[in-house]
Image 1 (cartoon, rainbow, N blue to C red):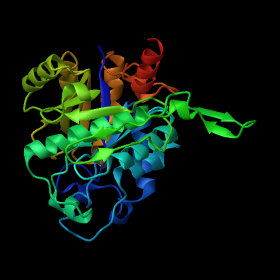
Image 2: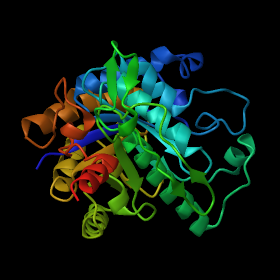
Image 3: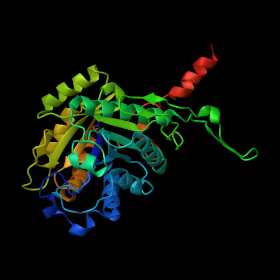
Length: 352
């Protein structure tokens, strides 16, 4: 078994004062060049994927009126400049229209040639509701319903075009075979969606969907992200997720490799120390989880150490998995291409 390693690249890092230790001037943080440089460094190091958190404001902004590029656009911006690394933005499930989410993520998958993913996350910041003109959702049952429905709608919309729906028949002037486009006819408690999508089925068929342990039904996503205070807690959470139907389980891990930088208190497993100690911890986790998503305390300090020492050591030990050019994120993670739901239903009906 070998670990798939992901890294969160939003902002300067998880430490509240990470900006003080950044290796660049403050005005560069929100630039496309900064995003591209960091993703390139992560790809060259051998990370399986980079994730991009999202919110209305930059991390640590405390209400300051500073703009930011949303997570999907950051991922799409670097898509054409990368060749192996998966690009996995956070997109909220509480207020965003799932039809738009489906289109944005399918487009990301085309731009990245099949390396797109999606972290489905609940929106708990009341400012999100206000910014989008929506009534705030706070009840746990309502947040769960919105998340469940959003994932179902997005997945059905990705399947609403069969793989061979695009025909490009220039002689007859037909671009698509309309018999291979399908209404999804979703009817939920809060909204309904007719479909079909306006973007053809993504290159992967379905992007890799990540969900958080204790929130998302493990059977609804491809990867469950688990947290815990200790490695034993991670092992227990991973076992429960697998028993509940999880296909892959990744551990969440805060890392602080810079001298004197403590890992923040986040509820995730945390490590602060030398690179050799982190390697040993990851080797311990290898027997319990399929991958780890690392949250650097200070990106500009931790990413170079991860690239120079940690990942090479794991590769030499056969503990880490390095993606290869031409692979999709699904194939890198060992996930089969999913069968198109509507095609399967149509073929079953025609065989009766």
